[in-house]
Length: 395
Ligand code: PLP
Image (cartoon, rainbow, N blue to C red; front, side, top):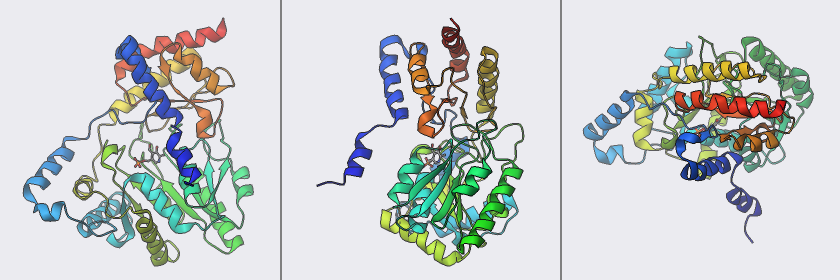
């Protein structure tokens, strides 16, 4: 008898992957230029040249036995020193190399935290709209996900529902700002209120409630938006970071967990995360790219292209009549669908060769995610198709 849960996870393709595969099939039939695939969040902007230059230099100049050898389970010491220096410089804090656990992307960072923190039956709070893999990660750690419905007006937090959901089983809360799928950044007031409630409830239940800050999109923000640095507001924050989006390196699988010194029982929490990494077999993230990412940690891909795409799509959708909150960052936009049933809406969009993802999978029905990490020309060509789709509802 196999593990039924794993068989199910390995068999069912995600809605996003289904759409992506459908797009490839449709492209073969009608030509890629006639398919408007907005399904997947794969960065469309190349890594900055310094990434490849650094990789080549390291390959040419480093003893291969060292470069391709095992690093410490938690990441190379020099890498973690570079990361601490970068974070301290950028956020005006004083973290140490020993606070970092280098991981295989944000996905593994989150899994290490969840497995390290949670006991069976614990609860982890997530705010809609949310990255659907959270449920898989949380349940994989033996915990249960509690979903707080979205504040669909501004995509901040519905604090009344949040406060009411916290109980003695609440172990952690995951936040993702800038957010996939809506692109919104939590304001400073939101972060302050979130911290206040977490502090009050931790005291009430006599144990820390950890805040997991999932931040793969931290640097992808527009209009000089500031993303509050959460450990400054709430001491029991663990930062889960990734270079998948900021340096356009999703295939290299690099990120980290940062356990700042302010975290209660810091050394025990760090040990639990390292233990989870060990138990999951996630030790020693890829060695070459640990070094490349650490040496390029202050750089990002050219995000101005995403901003151009955001402006074009936001203005275009509004003009057509879509109700949509303006994204502060990421490369996603999350308008309301033109009928309540977002699955039916996205099926209908296919007739116009528009591949967009239903909001239901993100815990937010009545919306659709459009990933604009695509060539700008694709958006220009797709806007008439969005108009035709909207017109089909007005007839
Ligand atoms: N968290 C969010 C919100 C994401 O959108 C993604 C990837 O799309 C991840 C985590 C996982 O990122 P990584 O590629 O670093 O594992």
